[in-house]
Image 1 (cartoon, one colour):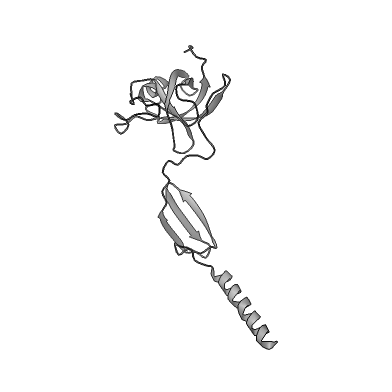
Image 2: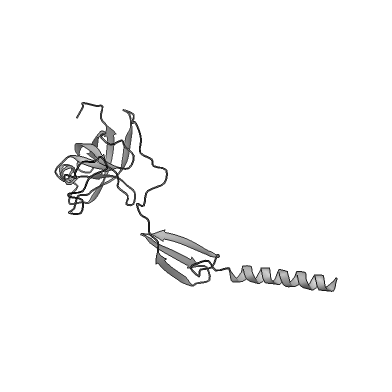
Length: 176
C-alpha cells in the first residue's frame, strides 16, 4: 500500500509542478499567457512578465462572416468609414469584376455588395454625394466599409482627408 501511495503522490507532484510551471508550446511560450494580434504582429504576453513577439501573417485580413451578397434589397443602406484607393500599385490591374482598374471612373470596392451594384455615397461632413458602381472587393483594412476610386473620392472631397464617414444607399437599376 505504501508503494502505491508513494507512486500516487509522486504523480500528483509531477502534475502540480507541470501546471504551475506551464507547458511550453511550439514557440516556447507558456500556455498561461494571453495572446494579442495587432497590425500583423502576433504578441504573446506571458503573465509572469516575459514577452515574446513574432510575425503572424493574415493574407486578406477579412472580417469574419461577411460573404458577398447575391442580391441586395432596394432599402439596403449602410453607414461607415470610407477611404479611397488607386495608387500606382492598382493601375493596370484587374478588379474583382474583371475590368481594368481606372482611377478616373466612378467606381468603388465593397466586401459584400454584388459586383455591378450602383450606390449613392453621401458624405455628411462635406455635404456632397456621388453615384458609383461596385466593381471590386475590399477594403480589408480596419473598420472601413468602402474604398472609392480617386475620381469618386475627389467628388466627395475625400482626397485630402483620406477617410470620412459616409452613408451608402443602393439605387434601383436605371437610376443615378
